[in-house]
Amino acid sequence: MKFILGTKQYMTQVFDDQGVSYPATVVSAGPVTVTQAKDIEKDGYQGVQVGYGERNEKNINKAQRGQFKDLGLFRYVREFRAEGEYNRGDVIDVSTFEVGDVVEVSGISKGKGFQGVVKRHGFSGGPKTHGNKHHERTPGSIGATGPQRVFKGVRMAGRMGTDRVTVKNLKVLQIDTENNQIVLKGAIPGHRGTLVEIKVK
Image (cartoon, rainbow, N blue to C red; front, side, top):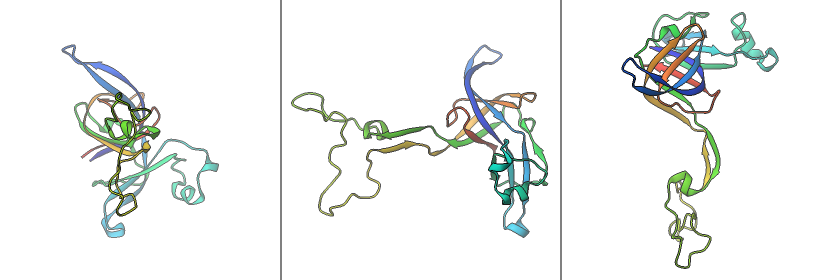
């Protein structure tokens, strides 16, 4: 299993040998450092904990400082369920991926604030004419009044976005080992600078 952490940079377009253009996202990925390797005997499962980015020492708690020790001061720490020989201190960079790999990317989507039902759930709204006034984008009835409460799961206005989203089947178009960048076909969740997890199952 291949995996790495990165931050979303920007979108662009990439041309192939036949001149066909593809929408692409540039991600600044890695290098990440293995901070802990978990095994079945001790932890009950196989996994790898990695650290990425830099942070001021004053903003890292004492427990993490003791865990990192001489490895560095990491801004992000994430864990992947991965099989293989990984040791504490190993460095993983974009060279582990190859052009043509099909990956899945997970991240936090853009926050859109408090939105109404038309934008949030795709409601059609009310009629625009024939005596209707100030009710073009209202939700309308929310059900019977017998129970005298709102049922769970009723689609209503509320905060939209900031959800964990996973996009699958994205193809690796280019790899830049000098600048630690990886170019993926299509769009990925989040704004510029969002932390994303890239992995090949």
